[in-house]
Length: 282
Image (cartoon, rainbow, N blue to C red; front, side, top):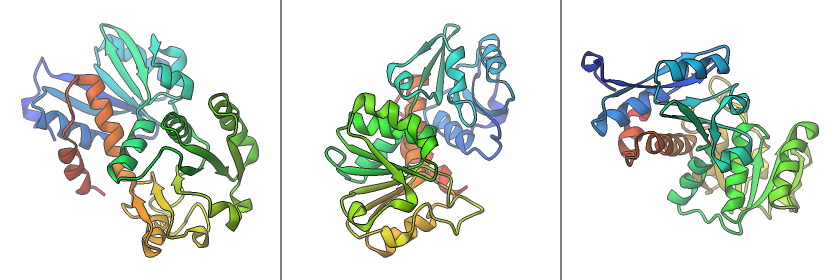
């Protein structure tokens, strides 16, 4: 992390906006990235109540860039000067870049997931991918994977909550299907290549929970859990026990954070440094 004694009048400010946000590991990761690249900048966490006011502060204080997390990823769009085409299509923003007083929104979540799969030599194109969940992360990942040529299926616990996401995805790919988690059959799951959990099920402190019955996991599956605390969720452990390929949430966290760093600075992020510092906290 940046040595606070080196902060001066020229130090650039970056941050994360959310509520709650004190649990975030983004400051640890991004400060390590700034230090490794010898960039005079510091990244802080701001727990805000109103995202519109936060953006006004961003302009007034010349905050160069920001991450956006729960519950503001969707609401923030209405207050931006410009939105990247993919983020607009997804309907969710997790990255802000202040360019001469104009705030531009991006979404790096989907890219973070794609990079994690690619780095593990997992084929995306033409793969059948089951995405569990229907929130902002599910949106970003689903849209980005469709762009990579994947076949997407959505599963959740509430049909009404899934319908808006499915409706929007079908504009890109009409054959998108969805089902309730409890209705997943053995015949269906055997057609799936990759299972991605985008929910918070299994996150610390409720580490004994899994988003689906682990009896539905077979060795042919790749199991990807975007939960990064604990590092090995019960879902990932079940996949490992069945000799599945597994992709950990920390990999998506790092990759989406690296994309943010590159948007803000125009420099390549040192991913190994970001991962090393995160391992001390997870």
